[in-house]
Image (cartoon, rainbow, N blue to C red; front, side, top):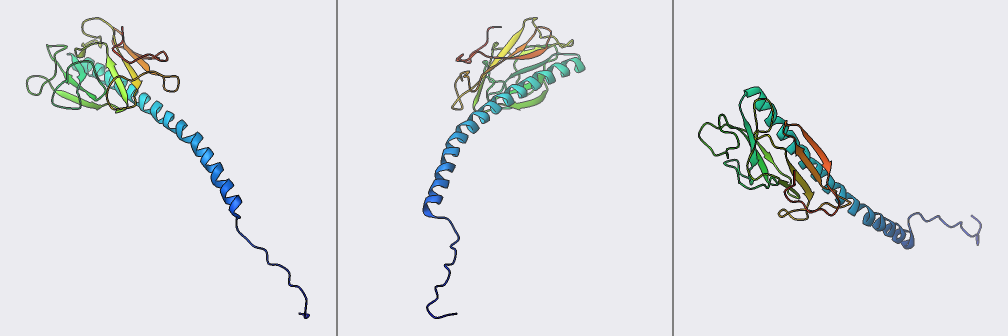
Length: 198
């Protein structure tokens, strides 16, 4: 090398502080947009899961009544597998049990009733039935008593109380016809979940 010659500058690799701050700011903005959408998607999924679970439970109870040729009932459990909780709140779960010769009877351990299945509710979804008595299906798959009934499902912020149908997370109405068939409809926006008028 010649004395007094200037060496070429080495290129510096890495990020400047400004580039790093801009990247962090962009990521923060994207996170602020994504988190609320993720929360809404999660609540929508919980509601759809709760509706699907109870819809499947009703179909199972109806099928068992036809196969066994005597009534099978479903009632709210209140989170316990020992007995029906009474009332019309299916949010904490339900029991499906046989009721030979005594449709619409409330389940209790012992006796002639057999517990077939225990279902779990979704903690952030309210599920309110139109009836405060158990729903029973007869040997032909019909609702015992011959009247249609239903349920209203809404998302809620806590794990208790009635929820509300919103534009972001619309509630659902699950209707059981007198013949025993089940269908689901969207609940109106800003409707409070209570016992549906069927």
